[in-house]
Image 1 (cartoon, rainbow, N blue to C red):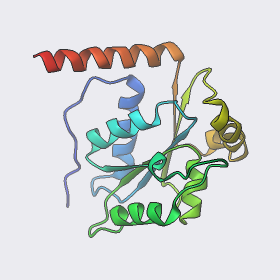
Image 2: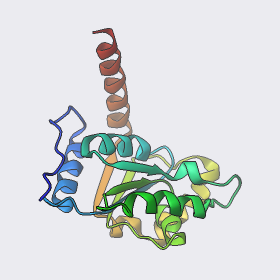
Image 3: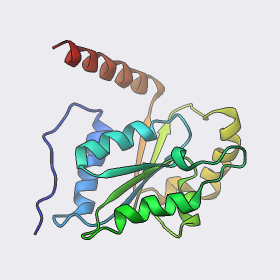
Image 4: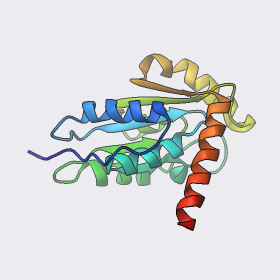
Length: 177
C-alpha cells in the first residue's frame, strides 16, 4: 500500500487548506487516479490554485489555456489535450491529475472525460474579460457548475488581493534570505 504524499502544511488561504484536505480524503490512502477539475471564469484564480495543489499534492496539472485555439468561440486542440491527459492518467500505476481552465466540462467532454472531483473557483464581483465572459457566463449557468461542484472556492475581491500581495511579499523575503 502506498503512503499518500502529504507535505508539511504551508501558509495558504483557509479555503485552499480546506480543499487540500477534501482532496486528501477523496484520493484515499491508495491515492486513487482521480481527474480533479478546476472550472470558473477567466482571471478567477484557477491557474494559481492548480499550481498550489500540484505542489502540495505532488501531482501533475494540465492547463487548458495551453491547448486553446485562437478565435471565438473557444475551442481546443483536442488531439493534444487527449494525449496530455492520457499520458498522465494512463501510467502504470495511474496517477491523479489536475486539469484547469475555462469551459472545463466542455473541453473534457470533447476528449470523452469527466472530472471525478470538480472545483468551481469564483471571484466575487468578477465577470471575466468581455470577450470570454460572453461565452463563459452562459456556460456556467447552462451547465449549472455550482450544483455540480464538489467544492466551491469563492474569493472576495479584497481577500484575493490580500492573498496575492502577501504571497508576493513572502516570496520576495524568501529570495532575500
